[in-house]
Structures are given as structure tokens and as C-alpha cells.
Length: 209
Ligand SMILES: [Zn+2]
Image (tube, rainbow, N blue to C red):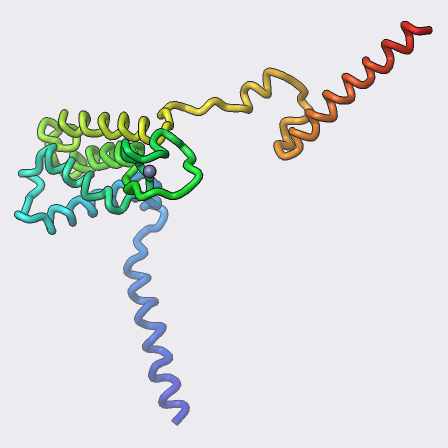
């Protein structure tokens, strides 16, 4: 019983995976893993193709225009995670509202912009002509700019690089402190009070005597 049942499933199971994996692993060194950008681009492209497939009326890539791309971006808004306040909302323009509101979640402008960049590249990599690239259409650029402007207003967040504390801190002072960010407050206070106290005490004493 044991010898028959043991060998039976035993060899067959290892055989399957080992054979297939041996077949799949063609020169692992030759094919480097996709970069994060490349794999994201591939995923986005598949999402778009899937969208075309489910489109009603049916839509093919060759008949796809900038208007369809915008339609696709709007469709993606339902999966968005960025709160964009409507003009009537009390938190309109507040980057960090104190309470929840009923405003819709959207795709952040930055993600849409990056997405269009990847799809635009993918379109041409998949044989599309640059002249007829729907992702490069003027209408798409205009739409993105409108989204950017409206989101900037609604959330009160200017889409600019944030000021970096580190650069200003570096110019100000001491080479001892930059490592410990957490203790920066303590160090600063100690330094200030120490300095003020010492000068304050010392000065009167010397002048009186
Ligand atoms: Zn709101």
C-alpha cells in the first residue's frame, strides 16, 4: 500500500513543476526584471485595452481619439482616492479639512498626468504612429490642465515643489545636528536658552562689580 501510493503521487508532483520551471527559465541573466515604470506601463496599457474591449459601442485602438482618452480618464475617477471639494463645500480650498464631507473622490491630477505619459509611450511601442497618438492629443492636454487647475483650487494645494527644510537648515548651522531630525526641537531650545541665560547672567554681574 505504502510503496505504491507513496511513489505514485510523489514523483508525479515534483516532475510537473520541475519540468515546467526548467522549460520557462530560459537564460535568467538575459532577461532582467522589468523596472517599476515598465511594469506599471504594461499594466496601464492592458487596463486601457480592456477598457476598449468593454466599450459600448465597441471601440478599436485605431479608431480611438483624444475624446475617448478623456472618457477613459473620467471613467478612472470612480477608482480615485483624492478628495476634490466642490465649490459649495465649506472645505473648498482646505488642504487638510477637519471633518469628512460628501465631496467625490477623484484621480489626482499627478497620477493622471503620469498615466497619460506611460500610455502615450506604450501606444507607440505597440506600433502606433506618433501623429495619430490619441494620448498626445491636444484635447487631452487641455483636459489635464483643467483638472490640474481645478484640483489646485479645490484642495488649496499649489502643485509646486515643497520648500525643503533640509537645505535651509544646512545653511544655517552646526554640522553635529543634521543626523538626528527628531531631536532637532530639543537641541534648538537648549541652545537658545543656554545662550540667553549665560549672557544675561554674566553681563549684569560684571557691570555691577
Ligand atoms: Zn468637500
